[in-house]
Amino acid sequence: MSEVLKAIKERRSVRVFGDGAVAAEELDAILEAASYAPSAMNAQACHVTALVGLPRISELNDALKLASALPGFDRYRDYVGQKSYSVNFFRAPLFLIVGVDKIRSFCPVEDGSMVMANILLAAHGLGLGAVWVNQLGAVGNEPTFRKVLTSFGFPPTHDIIGSAAVGRLGGPNPPAPPRMPGQSNIVTA
Ligand SMILES: Cc1cc2nc3c(=O)[nH]c(=O)nc-3n(C[C@H](O)[C@H](O)[C@H](O)COP(=O)(O)O)c2cc1C
Image 1 (cartoon, rainbow, N blue to C red):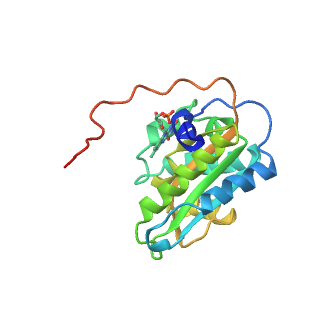
Image 2: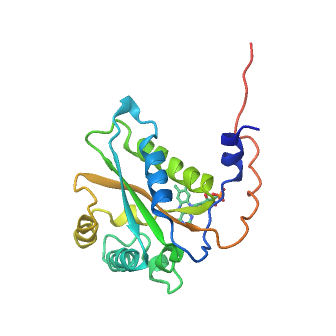
C-alpha cells in the first residue's frame, strides 16, 4: 500500500499526549504541509497561528471559557464549563488555529478543512498525534475572545475554521472505529 494511503488509514484522533515538545523542524514541516493544501481557485486564503507551549495555550483556553459563558455565545457553555473540559486542550504542547479570509476564499469552510486535513496527516506522518478541536469557531468573533486571538497575530480579516491540538503520542493509537456501511457506490457502464 502506498505511504499516503497507509497514513490516511492509520491516522487517529489523539487526545493523550506524552511529555516533550514538538520540535521547531516538526512545526515547520506541519505548517509547510498546511500551506500546500488545495484551495478553490487557488485562493490560498488560509492562515495558521501556532501557539507553542502551555502558557500561551492556557491563555487561549481561559479566553475560550470566558467567552463561552457569555449570552449569545453559549453554544458550548455547559460543555466548556465542565472542569474536565479538554483541560488546556488535552495539555498538548502545540495548538494550531486555522483561519480563512472569507472575502478572498471562494469556499471558506472547504478551504480551511483541507488545511486542517493536511495538518492532521502531517502530524501523523511525523509520528506525532493530533486532534481537531471544534469549539473555537463559535466564539471566534466575540470581541474579548477576538482581542486575545489578535494578540497572537491571528489576522483580523480571518474567521476560525478549526483548530488542532498536537503533541507527542501518549500511548498506542486506538484502532480505527469501524467504518459505516454505505459510504460510497460505484456506477459502471
Ligand atoms: C469537524 C470536526 C470536529 C471535531 N471536533 C472535535 C472536538 O472538538 N474534540 C475532539 O476530541 N474531537 C473532535 N473531532 C475528532 C472526531 O471526534 C474524530 O475524528 C472521530 O471520532 C473519528 O476518530 P478518528 O479521527 O480517530 O478516526 C472532530 C473531527 C472533525 C472532523
